Image 1 (cartoon, rainbow, N blue to C red):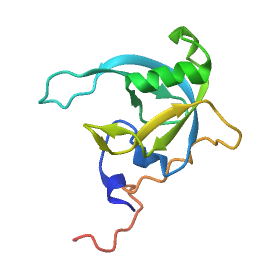
Image 2 (spheres, rainbow, N blue to C red; image 1 turned 45 degrees about the vertical axis):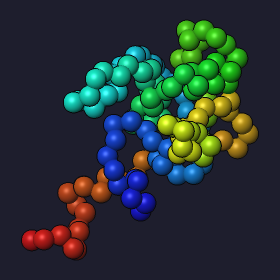
Image 3 (cartoon, rainbow, N blue to C red; image 1 turned 90 degrees about the vertical axis):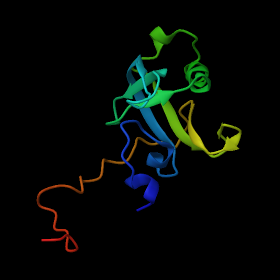
Length: 132
């Protein structure tokens, strides 16, 4: 497992996409504070998708891309519509290319996210290397 996938996050990250596009259905969205507890508030749009257990924080570019993908500039038309999330390696942050989640229209061959893997903390899991 890649180390990036071992890090906890309450929001979906580019690494979670596992290198392939995911077709998802917009369930809802709202503004929320995405800053860490000890930081100044940072208000962003947060989207919830029917197929995912974690929301996605949307930047201005992705909001515009959602409108493009759905051929509308009215957010009242978003709920219940499908888009595709994908990992774009050309996304820059702070002047550096870091990659990130981008949005586009659904294309032939885009599939829903894989089934959520079994929780590794299940009580029936045996961890042979754990201290007794």
